[in-house]
Length: 141
Image (cartoon, rainbow, N blue to C red):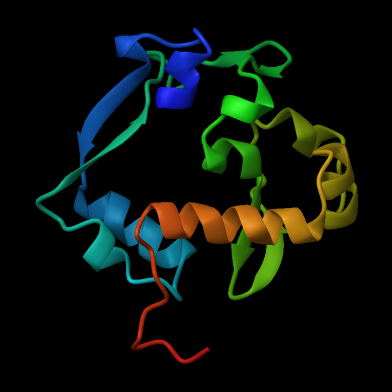
């Protein structure tokens, strides 16, 4: 939030505090089975997220993608649509993602996002660490 505000690219209405709903916690637990989601996002807690339009689109999404400079985007946004699942790199096939129209494989997606497998893994680890999502002790690596 501070980086976006510091760059003059977002006001108070650019972020919203939302409850950690059961659906949110369950979805994160599915997407990150190796992480202790319940400890980082207790069901009675809340978290900040980017605001969305009434149509559900990010307020920073323009016709050609994100309008934020890459250096101030939240880590999740720098990763999207790339992800790490069970230690393997993959990507979300969200219909609203412009890159999905052009990239038929993980390799082409990584290239189109102007990144590398190493950077994706590092960003994923950094995101997890900043969110307090340490590996779950109950899950064997």
